[in-house]
Length: 208
Picture 1 (cartoon, helix red, strand yellow):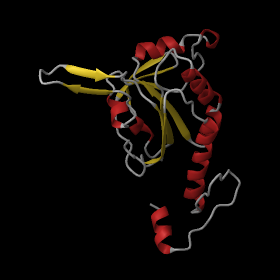
Picture 2 (cartoon, helix red, strand yellow; picture 1 turned 45 degrees about the vertical axis):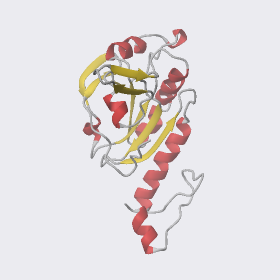
Picture 3 (cartoon, one colour; picture 1 turned 120 degrees about the vertical axis):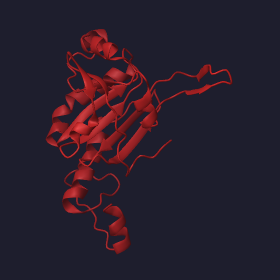
Picture 4 (spheres, helix red, strand yellow; picture 1 turned 45 degrees about the horizontal axis):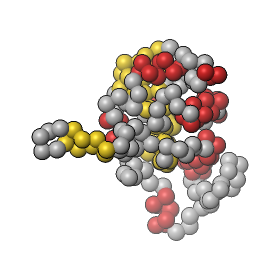
């Protein structure tokens, strides 16, 4: 598992769907210098756990927007699959009403670059592609700051849904550190006091 924390978020340009609109050249680069980004991967459209997460991100979207955070989802489905799922009502297993972008990683290169691609693939001596397992994304989530640097990442196995509340807490912690220069201890919540590192070496490390 690659650790991307502290490194520039891998750049890409891909098709995405927002509402009823298919975007031809979507890139997270558009947010550099403007917004934080919560970029999350999920395994598949038209499944069971995934819509609970996507709907919850939508419900909490005003909270992310108050924090100047853009929410972007991604799976290895096509833009047409995303579009169809977005037009399907919630009571029929769809995600109608979700209005943040969903990236189509149909070539699986984005999932590979973020190191969340499940399954293995290789070519044999005859050049034939051999795939073990299903090449879909784990439940990866990456918090990217306004400079395009990954500041937090978490990857869950497919049966394990994430906590949107924890995601918001991490956003608050990062912004508290940026605004006040105080580090945030375990279980820190917005409104709590932070901690100041007195040792110059520690302080210098934490400010990176």
